[in-house]
Length: 399
Image 1 (cartoon, rainbow, N blue to C red):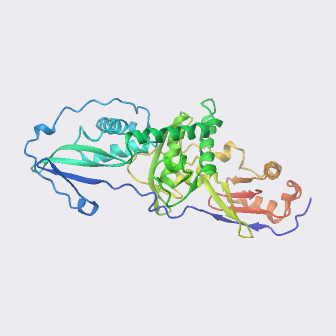
Image 2: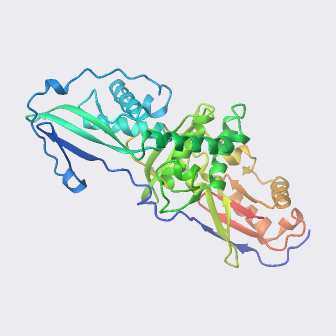
Image 3: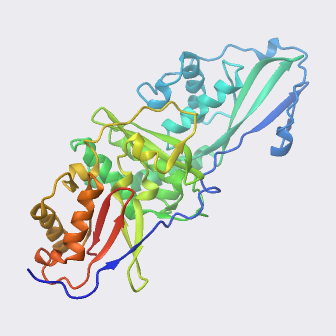
């Protein structure tokens, strides 16, 4: 055995995420209240004191609602709405896609309206030209008789077309290394790595709530990452929906994805991480813990809100460590050493995940404390590593 000279250096894992509260907060919607057919915009503080104004003639406010085309069959949020919710979802989506100024909805249920809109946003990460909506409540006495929906557009229809063409050009290049013929796992990993390598988390990034920040500026926050995951996976035929909630106590967004018929959670925001070596130099690496999580794993740091009905995710066959052969269930130093040797030769970070703490401690003692890693990594003089007790992992940083 070649005994390793020098001191093993334990490294500090750095989450360069910043505060997610401001960047990933849910858009607050304003009310516009009509009185005698005249409108008045109410700001956020005043909207908390909502009042209903009488309408002199309600007949003129109840036109036939045009039947909207169903184009979202098979999308996750859409399929988890009831029939009336799907109708309202279709109405809203059609209005946004057609750049309509406003429409009358076929419901007067405010909760249904909000839930349907949340569903649209969850299923369609590419709606970069809209940032919420305002709604108008028509009342007769104390009775709510009609709801009007008006998307809040951030650009003209012509500007939207120009921006879409620019995004299309970037996406075509980014997806040039993957195709429909690849497996679902390969597609998910490709998108996860793509965003980690090409997009920087910047708290105050412009257009951070949509895909413009990702594809045209390469700087975004969690909402931008989640929108981009949904948008890219859709291009590859993978069902994905945006999930909102909190992570480590701050507002956050991530994704629910479907691989080979089974559901997993993906948080691309946390895919790009870094560590500091003994000299204080920071080096980035892709953290695959958040690529295909079970519900149990997701709940270790994430709390979804109640806007979307979510499945219990228990599948593990598309877990990164299982698929890549770095999940260790028994003591086999030759197998582990071969993995380390390959990563050492390629100059990259490799993570071994263990089925239990006892096995992890045994590997730590053998490869790091006793220095047997030198038998597999010829010429190594210092071990740079990250020990993660929560995930039962040891990451060897050869980059």
